[in-house]
Image 1 (cartoon, rainbow, N blue to C red):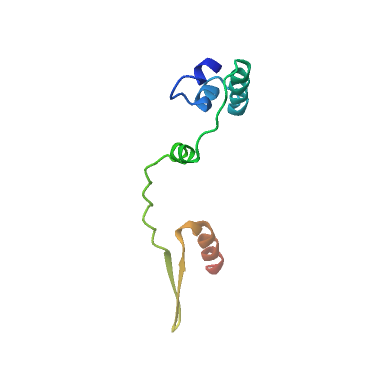
Image 2: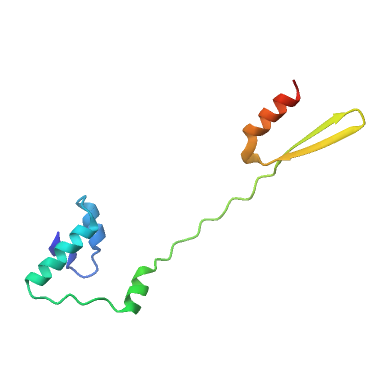
Amino acid sequence: MVAACRRPGVSSAAVALSHSINANLLRRWVSEAERAEGIAVKPLEPATLAREAFIALPAAARPAPSPPIQIEVRRGATTVIVQWPLTALHECSLWLRELLK
C-alpha cells in the first residue's frame, strides 16, 4: 500500500479506501517509510494545495417550486382562502379534517 501511494498521480485516500483502512493511518505509514529511507518529506506549496484541493462539480438544477395548496371555505357571506405549502400536505389534511367535523 505504501508503494502504491508513492506512485505519481495516486491518491493515498483512494488506496486507503480500497483496502478499508483510514487514510490518515496510511499517510502516516508513507511518512514513516520515507523517513526510514532518508527521503525528506517536503510540504506542498500553498499554490499547489489550493489547485489540488479544488474539484469542479456540475451543479444540479433546482426543481421548480411547487404551487401551494389552496383551500377556499365559504360560510354564508364570508369566504376564507387558505394556502398551505405542498411540503405540509399532512398538516393541511389534519386541519381540513378538524374544520369539516
